[in-house]
Each structure stands twice: as structure tokens, then as C-alpha cells.
Length: 459
Image (cartoon, rainbow, N blue to C red; front, side, top):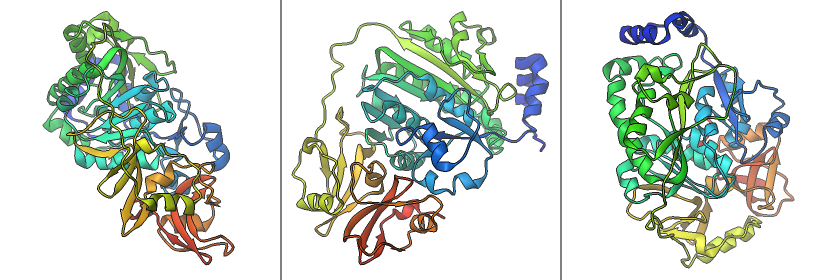
């Protein structure tokens, strides 16, 4: 495999790496590294190993991340479709691991699509607190929304706002913020060769302006005492060490924090490349010639100072009168989960369950508010795929459990009708693999009418 790298990029990397450049260039002749991250909202890494029968090599900087061979078998697997793992490039797992998350935190993922880092942060929250996942691109946010719903996340809000519109609403609101900034994507040249022509057209300077805009508003939304991760998948000093220098010079209340994760191959940043503050050395670079990954840059920062008295944001509540059809459905599906009526939110015919710490987001561009449960149609309730994905067998008594290798699992994912045990009483059921929900079906007379979302269909 031979790569034709842009001449300007090659020249700059030779200046940057010196004697290491030959090893860096040689890494492009090797195959890209593929990884998956176990969704610990649903099971432990050991639980995944036991269920899948696979003994994969662990990614050193992520205790729930594993290398795999990159074959389609991992994306064409019922366990993947049950949201038990997310396919993610190994280096890209690092930023979410670096952000220290405590239960109950309010977290903002500012550039969240397609959702790899948001789903990792949600797993760290373990159903507590609030996750706001934002991406200014509504088209990219469609993938973000699907991944959040497929992962069984209940406590999230998905927005498509410019950071300037967010910061005006959420000043000093978030405990933690992750900015995996849009960048020139030099770390993707091997995995996505199409990135190279785009790099030649725009280059680092174009993205540096975007990064400053995002960071300016991100810092405004971070409360004093809070932590922020800034990361990119590029090697450009201008977008990495240079951006940290910009932050430290423009925001005296921001300081560098030491990243506690240690693994072979991780390298500290080089402030001398940018003529910047020595504390920038606390940031970490992941180089493809030092480890099994495409490369990343990650920095952890802390904000100091007093909390403003006006940071309180009105809490939004549901509490509308919910049609009786929802209660009927809960009985028909054997659902034991208890819903707080003040958190049930009905918008037109669509029903959601708000996060416990739900801010007022009226006037913002919203793709999803909390846990989407379903909609009302012609005096009946139709449950959503995301409703099923977030339910456990303890919460729903009507579970049809399939073995991951059972052909019926794939038939279900292809939206086909299943023939099942005729002794099952009529009603709504969750179809699951290995005890983990795939979606809904409606049972009658030994037949299961498939209610799997057509947009999630196995192709």
C-alpha cells in the first residue's frame, strides 16, 4: 500500500519529527487499526467477552476498548445491533477516557457527531446527571442521534446549535465539557484517503478560526472548578499546541491539568514547537508510529474562579396529561419501570421522558429531548426503538431472548415476521439477544409482528 501524501504536509512533518519522520512515514504503509468499545451502560468488558466468546486485545488507554481485525463481521453482528459495543478508531477513544466524569455531572459534548465520544461519556455517567450532545451540522447529527438511541441512553439531549447560541443560554452551567474540535484531519489520512484533497484545499489555518470560536464559547459555558478536554485528530501544531497557547493567553482562569492515563507510546506535547507556555507539555500526543492507532491530540484543562450568582437555569418539566393509551401499553408489555409523571413530556403526539436535571431548551434547535418513548397514533401508543433499547429484563417482563447465533436474530433485524412459542400470551414484547434488547414485536397466536425500526434495518 503506497500513500501519496501532500507535499506541504510531508515537508512540515519532516521539520516537526526530524529523525522520527522515517518511522512516521512507514506507518502509512501498514493497515489502519480498528477498534470497538464495549458499552458499559449495558455490560462489562468481561461480560462482553463471555457473551461473544471473543478474546480480543485491549486498547492500553481504554479499559473497555479492544482491537479487532476490521472485518465487517463485527458490524454485521446481532450484539452490535443490540448496542453492546461501538466501533471506534482506537486513538479516538482517548479523549473521553481523559475527561474525569462523576455521577450526576452536567456534561456538554460540543462537536458530538457521529457520537463515539458522547456514548462513552454517557456510559461513564451510568444514567445519572445530564449529557448534552451538540453538533452544528443537522445532517451529521442524524448519525449522532441514532447512536445515542441505539446505545440505550436515557439522560441526553441532542441539539444542532452554533456554540454562540448555546453559550448565551448555558453560561457557567456545565461541570465537564469535551471539545473534539473540527480539524484538518491529518490523523485520518491513512484510514480516509479522501481527507487528503480536502486538506490541500483548506489546511490548518481554516480550522484554527473555527476552533477558536468553539473554544471561546465552550469556556464561557464551563463552570469554575469544571474540566474541559480539547482534542483533535490532526498533527498540526497550529491546531494543537497553538490552540492551547491561545487558551492560556486569552483566559487566565484556564490552566493545564496533568493527564493521569499512562500507556506505552503516549507522548507529551511539545510547547517549543509553538513557542508556548511550558505547562502545555501536560497535553498528550498519540503518534501512529509509536502505538496502534491513527493518532490524536488531547489536553485536559481546569477553570478557576467564583461561580456567578446568575448561573441558575430554569428546569423544564413535563407533567402534561398523558393519554390512557400509554398506560394500556405498559400493561400489555409487562413493563415494571416506574415513570415520574412530572418527567413525561408530550409534544404533539410524541412522548419523551425528560432527564431528571432537565434545563429549559425552548427556542433551541432540538433533535431529541431525553428518552424518546414513542408516539400516539389513532388511539394507540406505538413504542420507539430507543424505548426498547434502554429497558432491561428487570424492567420489562415480556422479553423474548434469542441466542446471538440464532438465525431468528438476523431475521428480526431484517424486519421479518417470526414464528414463536404459541403459548405466549398476546401483547407487546421486547426481542433481545443474550438478554439485551433489540426492539419491539407484537405477539398474537404464535406469530411475532416485527416492530423493529425500518431505519435500523439490517442490510
